[in-house]
Amino acid sequence: MDFELNSEQTMFQRVVREFCEAELKPYAAEVDETGQMRREAIRKMRDLGLLSLQVPEEYGGAGLDTISASIAVEEIGRVCGSTGLSISAHNGLGCGPIVKWGSKAQKEKWLPILMDGEHLGALALTEPQAGSDLLNGAQTFARRDADTWVINGQKAWITNVSYAPVMSVLLRTNKEAGSRGFSMILVETNRSGLTIHPPEKKMGLKGSPTHMLSFENVTVPADNLLGNEGDGFVMTMQTLDSGRISIGALSVGLAQGAFEAMVRYAQERKAFGEPIANKQAIQWMIADAALEIEAARTLVYRAAWMRDNGKDYTKMAAMAKLKASEVAERVCHDAIQIHGSYGYSREYPVERMYRDQRLMSIGEGTSQIQRLVIARRVLGEFSK
Ligand SMILES: Cc1cc2nc3c(=O)[nH]c(=O)nc-3n(C[C@H](O)[C@H](O)[C@H](O)COP(=O)(O)OP(=O)(O)OC[C@H]3O[C@@H](n4cnc5c(N)ncnc54)[C@H](O)[C@@H]3O)c2cc1C
Image (cartoon, rainbow, N blue to C red; front, top):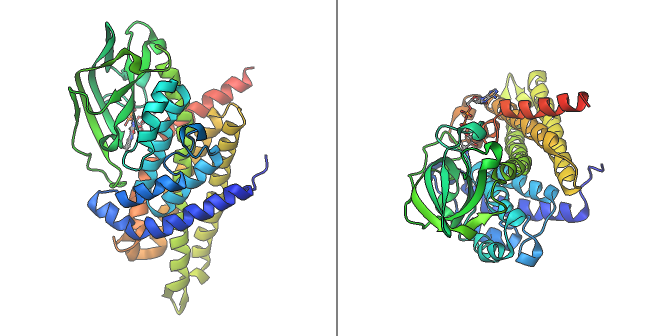
């Protein structure tokens, strides 16, 4: 694989960076303080294709490859973690399943609305009692009743749902069929019986809305089924594979933002008569960060390249997400260390980045689950 970005990817990166510097970076602290995304910036993203990264051009999307999509998420995450998470979730979890499994009618109905700059997409998998173990733990049930599905249960921690006109929901549709007993169903968020609870009060990513949902006899037409009945669990695993590349990219972005702040600060701050950047202990933190970010980004691009080239990328996506989230944790930690007490202050962005990165090793599969996925694949390869 050639790791050089091609000229289109390089140009796209430059355009997205300029946009992020102007429209997101100056407002990132405010987004964190107020818990409100900058809607004006989201609207402007439409014209750059940031709301339709991998939606095919025939549906009005940007139709980009996965490396370009990763570049976009990295660049947004570099300046604003909250916006990065919401845009990652919107593209990968919100639009992704509709693009991949939606009927022509479902695509024509929902994709234009999801890309219009006023809305964001959402995917509801997690439940109050089940995140890692959806197979055994997810209980929210859709009962077939004539030409409808009737849904009862709860979902938890759902990103963007307050901005979503519709969401894909993982539902148990057959209690006896194990992993084949799940289906993915589109649920309009204005359906009666659906309650979107107040936003969760989170440690970081405060501008990215996260909600618990209750379904009480929520009724949707039978043709809201996405893909085939019984395929919901497999669809979930495939969506998470690609979502992990995106969370890897977001982690790289958060690490990159903290890295740039740490290097600049080390060159400005003086101690013992010289910039602290002259001290070897500081240089080692800078060198480790530079190395680790490069390694993480390479894994993200490799997983993205594998996806674009039709290879089995499950293991690589898990590796990319695991590595990048651990790198983000380490780099944001060291960025605060280099800032000393100022790093502990809300006046400096590294404090926010440190809080924001903490989700990266939890969402879309915890680090323990990534290790499980990698180990299972490795053991499988060795027993062949
Ligand atoms: C900000 C935010 C946004 C989110 N957005 C969404 C969203 O849009 N849609 C959605 O569906 N979900 C979303 N989630 C939920 C998220 O994906 C889950 O929280 C995550 O998958 C972990 O599930 P859990 O919290 O239930 O933890 P649990 O599954 O209860 O895990 C608890 C601990 O046990 C460990 N553990 C579990 N099983 C094993 C095992 N087999 N071996 C070793 N250790 C194990 C875990 O690694 C973890 O450390 C979001 C969460 C947050 C915080």
